[in-house]
Amino acid sequence: MIVKLAEKRGFCFGVEDAIEIAEKAIDEHGAGNVVALGPVIHNRQVVERLESAGLRQSGRLEELEPGANVLIRSHGATPDVLQQAEKKRLNVIDATCVLVKKAQEVVKRLHQEGYRVVMIGDRNHPEVRGVIAYAPDVVVIDHVEDVARELPHKEKLGIVAQTTHAPEHVAQIIAAIVKRPYVELRIVNTLCLEVIRRQQAAVKLAGEVDVMFVLGGRHSANTQEMARLCREAGVDTYHLETWADFDPSMVEGKSIAGIAAGASTPDWVINDFADRLREV
Image 1: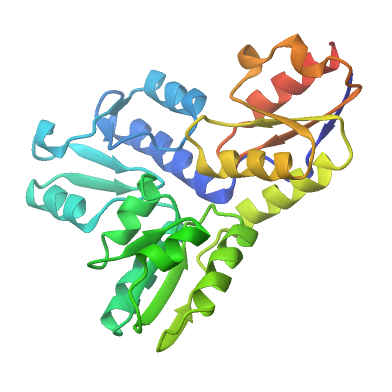
Image 2 (image 1 turned 90 degrees about the horizontal axis):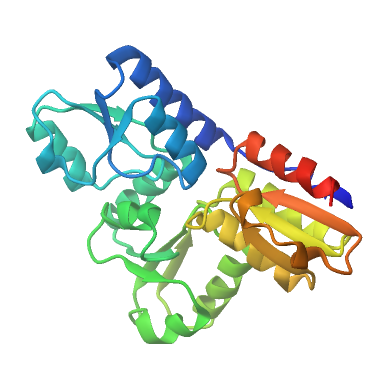
């Protein structure tokens, strides 16, 4: 089988930083002495590697003793969580992506300047849950249909977006907002350029192959978005985590396969998949 790889794929700088911070914390404090508040990134294979190196997982600060080392995941944390950690005298190790931090700061500033904050994103995603906690009454929307149903009338709106969203998707929603009578609109670009470059590379490759494999965690928002964009480009697309998810029926009648990968997918997963696919 002929296999082509997307020009841009795999780890972004935010993911690389988070993993490096986690590994450094384990080295400094010892195996079993660092607790992550949820998966550091949305990739099961990387999380399992960190756990085997000695990173513990916990979703509750109440379980931790004063002085414990707490790792904040790349998706960030709410102000309440950070305040609770300070109150319990925990040692906070912050692996929040710098672009997520920017979104948090923008939401806080927009509220202080009198805007009703609107976030375009998945309300159940940990990044979004963390970001909207930096201002009261943030409206979260993710579909054009939400605009008429969810947004307040005749207010000053300050608009941000989940960092991993495709710009085309965000633009469609903003276009629907612009058509409505708001006093003022302020749009701050919080999208991740690294994610956009990977999405663009995947879509470009999708036009050159018979089938696309998008590799990444099941819960990775940017990987899910990449797979959606490839399907919209008109090519059969499969979102898989590793080679273990592959089925030969996926390539029946196909001669050229493309591989793209989300921003939290490690090189070893991509290379292993490509090597095995070439042998099919």
